Image (cartoon, rainbow, N blue to C red; front, side, top):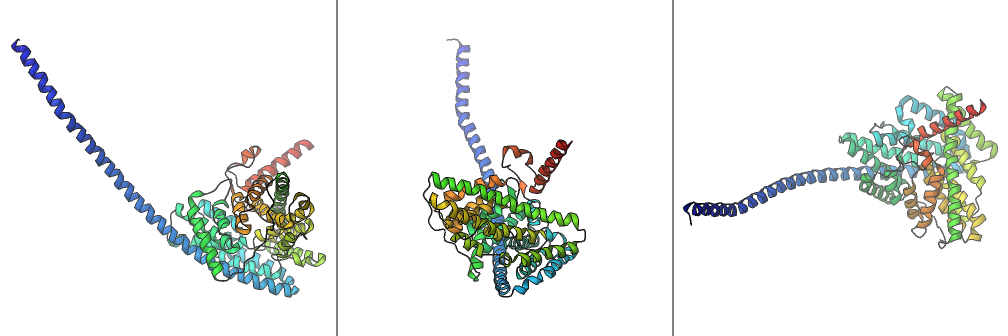
Amino acid sequence: MKESDTAAGMEERSVSELDGAGAPARTSAAIGGYLRAREHVFAEDTIRGARNAWQSLRLFSLVALVAALMGVAAWAFLTCLDAVTGFREAHLICFALLPAVGVFTAWLYRRYGKDAARGNNLVIDCAVSGRRIPPVMAPFTFVCSVATHLAGGSAGREGTAVQIGGTIADAVSRLFKLDEYDHQDLLMAGISAAFGGVFGTPLAGAFFGMEMCFVGKLQYRAGVYCLLASFVGDAVTTALGAPRESYDIGMVPQLGPSSLAFAVLAAVVFGIAARMFSGAIRVVKRFYAAHITNYLVAALVGAFVVLGTYVVFGLYDYGGLSSWLVEAGFTGTATPVDALLKLTMTALTLGAGFQGGEVTPIFGIGASLGGWLGAALGYSLGVTPAFGAALGMVGVFGSALNVPMTTILLGVDLFGGLAAPYFVIVSFVSYLVAGHRGVYPAQRIVTPKWRSLGEDQGFTVADAIEHHDAGVRDGEGEQGA
């Protein structure tokens, strides 16, 4: 063997040995680097998680505070409504207060209310875009809504509650300097606390806060806050002894072709009724705005129209909450005329600028229609008036407010889960039939209801209505030409 060959072999063995010794070292270094990187990421995740947990805990605390305050406010409001309703029913002369209440409400909001006159629509804007709610909104709507019911105005209570809940949430948010993200979540929680507290429906209240601001969207990120707020608001209001209504749905029919046909047919009727309801309020408001320039004169004329309608046609029973309509619907003694009269009086009242909500009148309208349908068609289809009235309450509510998921949970809250399949059917069918209409013009249309309404995406409900009304006018003009 040559000396050169021996030297080469020794060099190869030396390199091989060095490589063998270096591989573990490189592997060890790589593992160490990986672990250090993961340790750094873990540390960052831990810090971020702790910060998020602290922020969430802080927001949970503020949600509980807002809900508790709203629970007290809801109790006070419901107690006052119960007192003035009883007094008015015993003293019909209270209806003579309508002109004074109407003018006072208009003057108060115009002089001191700033944007508070926009009511729930301002709350929606605040929850979506961060606009501020004037602190006077809560006391103004409380006092003026109670006055409306004392004078016999046909209005509800949800609008007042939502405005109070929104005002409380906005004030707390400003006090604790919340960022835009947490501010929106707290506003939605305040809406949930208001609904759950006033109606005693915590599941529906939780979804109402997530759903009220949009058409075709649930704000899931606020879900846990809305759930907490609704249950706390309801618990506080109930603990303080607020009056609660209960309804007996009676027999729930087995799912079958006849009962399903009834549910679909009824849902179509409820959707049409919802369109008529929101449309009537809009028409009355536009009429006064277009024909009377002085706001105090408009308020006075509107109040006298409401009063005159009560007196001339003897419709005193359709004033205030008209809770008897729900009972009549469940017993099958209500008629479509009852629903039409309640719709008319509510449109005249709210269109004239009186304060109050829409939901309780909607309950009466829906129960009347549903109970009548149950009495007229139900017995041949195995459906009772009480069952039809229950479907009507939730169906007209959900389609007028564009809140299908809230509608389903409202049915479960009020009547239990046995009829849940019917609530689902009625909720979505009536929701589609109602189209892009509703009692909250500020709602944002995120998911259009129909393919043909796709151009409405991104509009508010008010924008969509104006857009389609303009299209109809243009079409008439072209035909005329």
